[in-house]
View 1 (tube, rainbow, N blue to C red):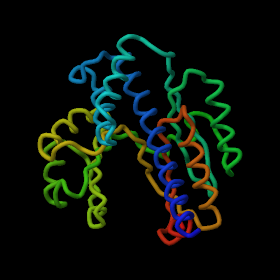
View 2 (view 1 turned 30 degrees about the vertical axis):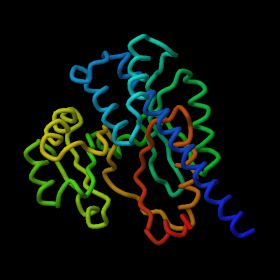
View 3 (view 1 turned 30 degrees about the horizontal axis):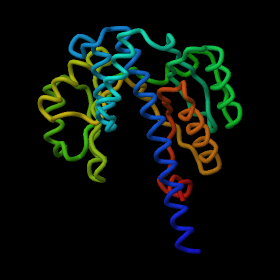
View 4 (view 1 turned 90 degrees about the horizontal axis):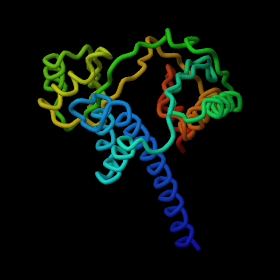
Length: 252
């Protein structure tokens, strides 16, 4: 029975990983299609598509999937998607920004409001928490791209504004920030110096972090998971900070 149980557990984990991967590819495909539909199929002349394809490659999305998504946008297939931003508060008073691509605004608003309500949060009006974040460009590189000095020099030459490289000590990599409007130019320059990045994204960077204790952390993580699991949601941003020991308990 022990062997059978272990097999079942492995298959369950694999099934969950495959489901997460499939959902991630679906969201990447949607962004590629929208970018292609709006700005054309040439990444060199369409910065949004260039970023979308770079992120898809960073997640090991097959080339055929990427091309199908581009072609779908070129031919105007599928529904028209609207870009929508939702804002609200989660457990512990943390601020949450949700970016969605949806073909049905009413459905998306209802689903996202439900996620907040069922997980100790409250959806607010647009702008209710956005002022707590800065709109910037974010470029991620693995630790293998180089040590802190190498990445810092490349970032300065590319016109970036900030680099966080302390994560590299744990093998997690470097995060480079730049002005939102300079993202494509900085990413291109960095690719020439450091190679292809793991991801290139516009992001909402919190100005300050809100500590969340163990009593609220579990519910907050359920809220984040529920939002990220929604098919219309592309990205979720927040300003929480949870102690590593608490996160380890939640992951156990």
